[in-house]
Amino acid sequence: MTYRVCVVCMGNICRSPMAEVVLRKTLADRGLGGRVEVESAGTGGWHVGDPMDERALEILARHGYDGADHRARQFTKDWFDRYDLVLAMDRDNLSNLRRLAPSWVEVRLFRSFDPAAAEGAEVPDPYYGGTEGFEEVLELVESAAEGVAKHIADELSA
Image (cartoon, rainbow, N blue to C red):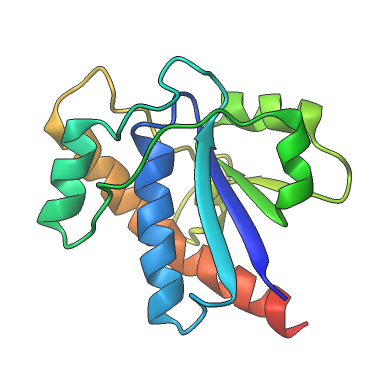
């Protein structure tokens, strides 16, 4: 059985692709890479086909990750059939996704898997800021990725 995850933000050029890359590596490091597919998308279509934001790529590369192959995509309602878990980067995207989601798909905030995060904690959008915002996103994503991987491992062993 292949478990499928999609990480979702607004435009799919900053937060969700960073989370996709980090989560994929975290799962591979736990020996789950061959059993889990990780993708990302945006709720909006403004950047469809565009590469990841250069600042996101730079921060990822600086920390040993590679996001060079990413191209932005837009999440649509019919995609829910593809995934076991859909992870929103913030409450606005969570609300939009939950309105569209069928009952059998789990839709949660990405940071809900970080035991150190407050309830309802979000990954802030770094797009309109400087490099430090992308560093913060990476830290938050790395913190939550371990919890996401544990959840998936538990689901696969159930």
